Length: 135
Image (cartoon, rainbow, N blue to C red; front, side, top):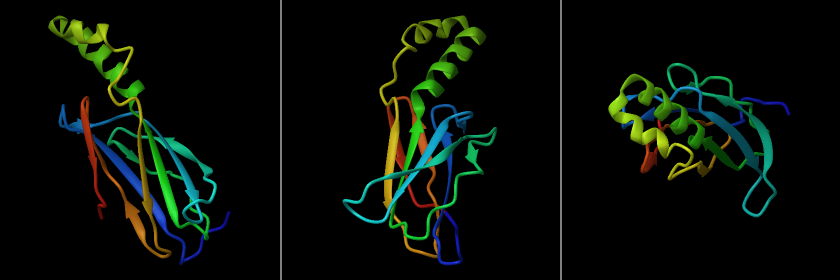
């Protein structure tokens, strides 16, 4: 799939608002479709880096009208809680429940316009999240 100056592009990052730090090593997958009702086409994915950013998301096809970002949040919270429990014995009770997550995944779907860049940050905590169109 080729890209041109009229192709939309997407980037994202994740901030764990419960710790005030970037969410590291979260799986992010990208899919696109040509419009409502069209089939989703998986384009690939990435993982967040030490700054919580995905710098290598796949390019969008030229006919893209809608995009879907899927964030694998459960594995992030499990590993975060286990690491915290190892550092602080008083938090060990949280690790017992680390087999599940209230939001095991977060899916964000949005419309794109050719030629525009869309930065879609995810603000994440164990029991809530929000997104917005960044710059």
